[in-house]
Amino acid sequence: MIRLLRYTIGSRRRDKAGWRETRDMARETEIKLKIEDVRAFHRALKRMRARVVGQGTGRVHEENVIFDTPQGGLAKHGQLLRIRTEIPEVRNKTKQPKAKPRVVVTFKRPPAEPSVGEAQSASRGRYKVREEIEAEVANAGALTNIFQGLGMAGWFRYEKYRTTFQLPVSKGWAKGLLIELDETPIGTFVELEGPPEAIDRVAQELGYSKQDYVLKNYLVLYVEECRRKGEQPRHMLFPEKKSPSK
View 1 (tube, helix red, strand yellow):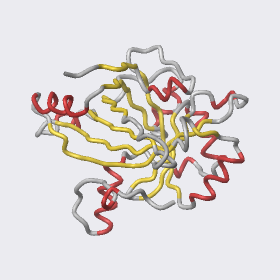
View 2: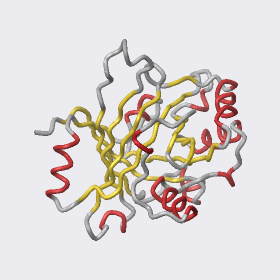
View 3: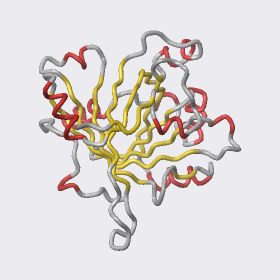
View 4: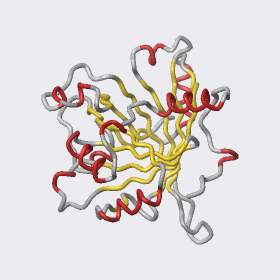
């Protein structure tokens, strides 16, 4: 049995950031930036008075599985179907109970047409724009069985540690903006998700220009990294499930 815990148009995190959607499917507007100096990045966040979203450290381990048909029917249409399992980090594992995993199924697709604001900016290719819908479920295994019964398979797995930040309410221009630090097996990135103008402003305050924007997903970045190293792409996983060093 699958128990639907939560169904949202778009991202639950985006709702918490104060960005409400009125369309049938939310539009996710984001970019990535490659971080070479993590300490300098944290110093910049401190200057901007960014705060962690969530309890404790805010650091969450994510295990993602992408599903598709054997013919790659979803990917051919620019669509993505994913099951993500999130486990919050517990600072003192000997004294605190193990955090309960959160399982989210997400469907993404290219937008049918740009909105008025996006027609002048995001549609020009400066940002990655997708329509998104997600639901929180109780059992990843049962949902996996359903997808497999429909002829799909989980063909690519990737994991990362994500810490989400927001700027203070006093910075009204940053309403709806999420700053998501991703520690991955192929390096450290930050995803900026929200209104295009806020993305540009924060990227500039972090020391980046529009030429630094990365619009590729982690699958593409992983395959490119494997080619650079002369390795065969498999799954983007940390060695022996260990947390990356900070």
